[in-house]
Image (cartoon, rainbow, N blue to C red):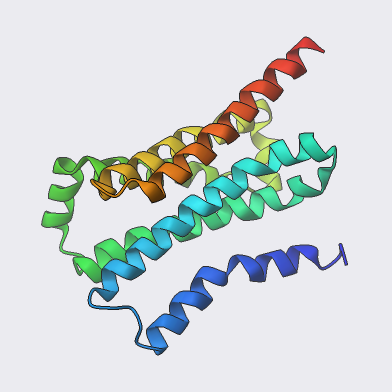
Length: 193
């Protein structure tokens, strides 16, 4: 079973594609289909950020390395869904009309912070291979600590986008805070040993 577990997890991680494809073919995206698709992939990006951040705490809690073997895949799915989220916005929403897009990035703080989060994901995706881990050595961990900043930027993007509806963003904010506090707690306890 463990031999095929990565393949199984990979296909489970494609669920956001399956579900939105069904909604498109079923014509159930509602009055604003582009907005629905953009928000769908934005929320799944946050879900995968939470899943990626939860791997190390789960390793410590369960005293099992099984979680770590999925972390890289989950991290790459963060980049994958964040990229679809962004390209849905610039491609389907604005049809690659760069002037209003640049205007939005400059004037709207939620778009600015979201774009910044996506930019920070690029070095993480580019250095995710085993070859890059060996090449960067200790610097690899420093680069991949950007995920904490990306998580904060991602939740700020969602909060500022929501404006008045805070329930959804609040849940993600609480989850991300708990996961980041777990990191601080475990890092402190490991330095004491």
